[in-house]
Image (tube, rainbow, N blue to C red; front, side, top):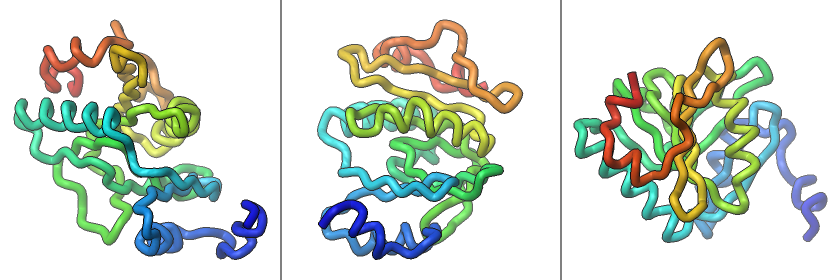
Length: 184
């Protein structure tokens, strides 16, 4: 079946509930995201190196007192273009996000972290950067897939992300600091 034939069977326009139902019914546990403009993305689950980086970051946050750290939690991105549904690789919250069936609002989201992979690099570097900024997510970190797992830390200023001074830095450098230094 071609992509065009497959897409002709999808409801138009797609809703966040449609996307959640597709993910729930998927026997391969793929991730489903929807941009605010209605573009559906389907991704395979992350590989080992990706999971290792996410786990290292999650443990780092936990060791420094952050208890509301989640891998692959669906968030709702409200922008002027519409409502999207994204799944950051890691998200840190204060306070705990409000309980929703799938897509939680971004209220209280301290930082969204995306770990690059070949299939998502352009989306993470360009589309999500713009979308997360438009949704008002204060901090967005992008972890590269280079040997050093270089972390680019972005902070929202006047509706756009600006690189934090000294960014990007190797993940090993970041893990030798405290999250409090970067989440002020």
